[in-house]
Length: 182
Image (cartoon, rainbow, N blue to C red; front, side):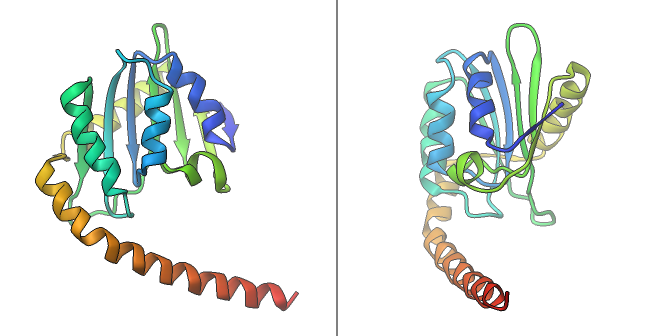
C-alpha cells in the first residue's frame, strides 16, 4: 500500500495499461471524464458507477450516454433515495494484476489535481477482488443512465450550482474571520 496525495500522477500510468476499469465516484465532471478518456486505450472496458447526490456535471452525463453507444462503456447511476452515495474507488486491471485507489478524491479536476486529498493505493489482488465485488454489489442496485434522466437532471443543475456557490461564499467568509483572529 502507498499513500497518494495527487491522484492524477499515480492514476494516469495505471489507466494507460488498463484492460478493464471499475470506477465508483460520488461526483464526476467533464475534467474527470476527459482525464479518463485521455489516459485509456480505445479497447479498454470501462465500468462506471456515478452518484448525483453531489453536483455531477450534466455535460459529463450526456457525454457518457454517447460513449455507451460507441465504446465498451457500462454506466450506472446510484440514485437510491435512502442512501447518500459518496465513494471514491478507482480499480484497474492490466494484463497481469490489479491496482486500486481508494480515498477522498472525486473524479473532478479538484479531486485529481487541486484539492488536498488522500488516497491509498492498493496492489493486493485479493483485496482488489473484494473491491470489485463491492463495486458490483452497488452497480447491480444502480439504474442505467438514460437520456431522459440526463435531461431532467440538467434542468435542476443550475439551481444546485447556485446553492453550492452561496454555501462556498459563507464558508470563505467564516474562514477569513477565523484566520483574522490569529
